[in-house]
Length: 311
Image 1 (spheres, rainbow, N blue to C red):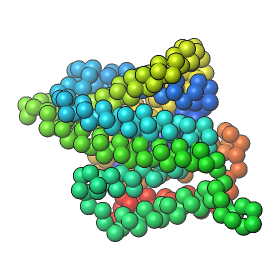
Image 2 (tube, rainbow, N blue to C red):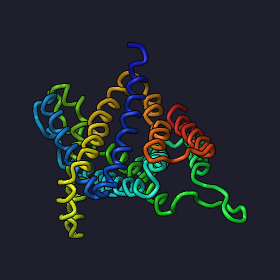
Image 3 (cartoon, rainbow, N blue to C red):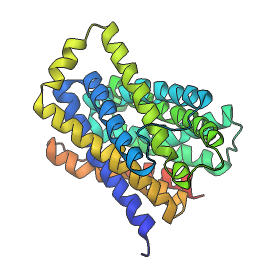
């Protein structure tokens, strides 16, 4: 089928949009920590089932010590720091602006890869970073008293959003290192399906480490009764389940399929359109107005993302 990869990439962006909206709703019902714990363990179960059906083992087979170490570090950075920041940004500024700030993740990942892995950082990448930052500035800055430029959003929410992008960007580089070690650990005579399902197995490892990480934090803060109450909240659990299905399950699966049928640059750009798709449904659900400045800002930000992946 022509343009199958592009269609799948767009469906990924829609899937992540739905996941973001329901993450926002879940956080408001049962809190950020409980939402993170429950959705990571739900992800663990879903991914285990997928691996069992495809590979024949409901766990990441062939993962060695180095693989586990680096993927665990990526989970601590990406989930326990990054997603904690992301869900707190949803509570403060909403999923619409939280997702927009997440467009900082690719530039942060590029900088981290340049620092730690020696990856090339081209002039086009630097230009894309500047364009992305300009788009974000248009979206979140405005004129205040005395025509001074000031934030139009709560500072706390913006800081959480930037922290979320940092967590995802740095976590991505750590995941890449872990995936490299994982690929090297797989025996040459292993079935090809094991290599195909490598991202799912890696995501499962990260989910279990992240889940226990959040559990440990809640235990230290003596918040386990809060988790117990969350598990009994039917609406909150429903929102979390929907978020998990459209995020780690459908979203990750379709993203892996998309890059098989089209270039990584085109797929990545189309999959980064969530801040565009989320604007209208989020505005309707939460009765928020969409200002022209925000539309322009999102458009410029998406241009920056496109430059980053396509040039």
